Image 1 (cartoon, helix red, strand yellow):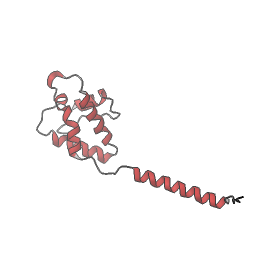
Image 2 (cartoon, rainbow, N blue to C red):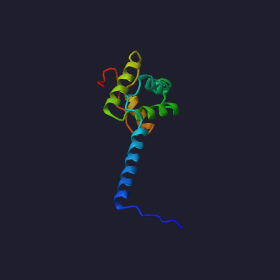
Image 3 (cartoon, rainbow, N blue to C red):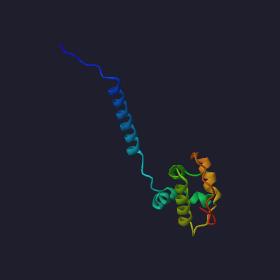
Image 4 (tube, rainbow, N blue to C red):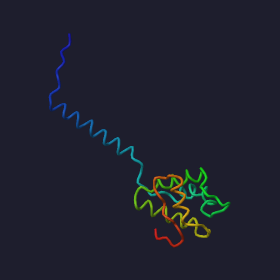
Length: 126
């Protein structure tokens, strides 16, 4: 024969607050870091798109690998600072390359990236 006491309303409220705090803590710990995208990562994702943005082989659509890269790049741009870092990286990576800046915009639309990349050219202000 066991006797169990029911928890008081105050204890239940304290328990609910504790659980709520633990859930919030888990979300904070599970959130990825806030560092800007690295230029190395952006360059790797951009590499499969070089022939497309240069207009070589008369490629009308970006390749599947290029689309995956553009999607990854657009996913890196969550905040304004992220866009600036990605833009500067693209400009630096392609500084000595002939390419059509509009192809970033067209490619991101064709690949359904969820974020249309603006035309990033040599004169673009990031």
